Length: 216
Image 1 (tube, rainbow, N blue to C red):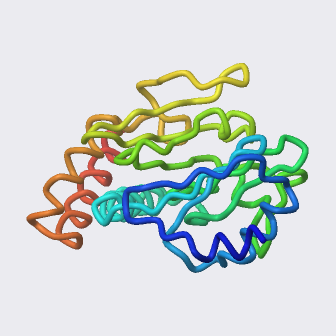
Image 2 (image 1 turned 30 degrees about the horizontal axis):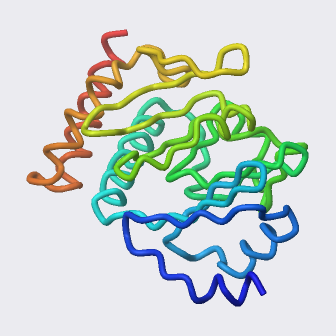
């Protein structure tokens, strides 16, 4: 019955729907029904399921910031795996989340080649990214899943949260890129991408990263 009703729900961009008293079995069925190739994101916290449809500007910021992170990792010659909005969930904790973007960096070798991940045995992503245009971030879920680092981009500013004693604290430095002033640099390169274009922005950013590497 829930799946039938779910199919009738339309979530406009920038809006969300909350479903209460959703069991884990119902969550699994809903995820299968929604499918992997969809725009909507979900968050599940002990029986409460949120389904949100992002705005176009949300997706643009996500893509450019993701491209900047990929370029940074490539220039630093660090292996990584980008898993986009993969569903991360843990039945024992009754929690699950789909980040806007996520990266395996330090733990990349531990999940290399795997098609499916199970947080009961596999590590969480080293870095999760959330674009807060619609204020849908759930830090408590990321804390429970023990994601070491969470980036929240909101109103043109980057906030870096790192896990310390099972809770996030705001930090001026990234665990994954401790020598790069990301809070300052990411917004500086995101804004001109809307006028100069993606390729030109990434090229300039790569040159800047190379310069930083040579100075270290």
